[in-house]
Image (cartoon, rainbow, N blue to C red; front, side):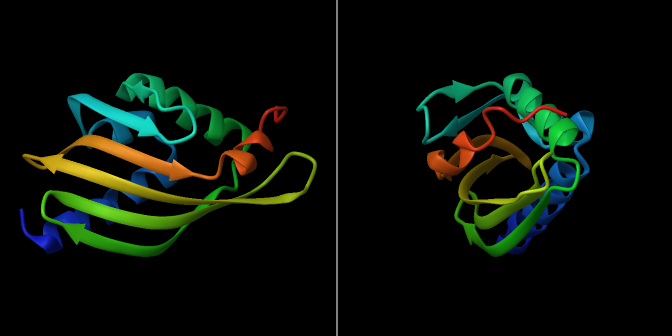
Length: 128
């Protein structure tokens, strides 16, 4: 894949996540892809991660991924973004994030996400 291909994949991937449609997001991943977060150090499967996406879709329906930067890598892309949403109590909330995404044969094989654990703690009691 060319650098432009990786960047285009990143753009389509974020659009799929923004839509919150699990099947669409799943289609970007290799079957054995792993997702890792710096806040817990645990590798997730795609299905485990899609449960989190479902929670976000249900509890933060107005969420928006504001991409600040996306750069092609030799085997994928890096993206810096801000996840913005309104909590059920009306409070505006945001989370700075950076992801490093590895791609093979046009599918994501690994996604390492670096986020602010303090900001994610704000979501502990969120329920719609």
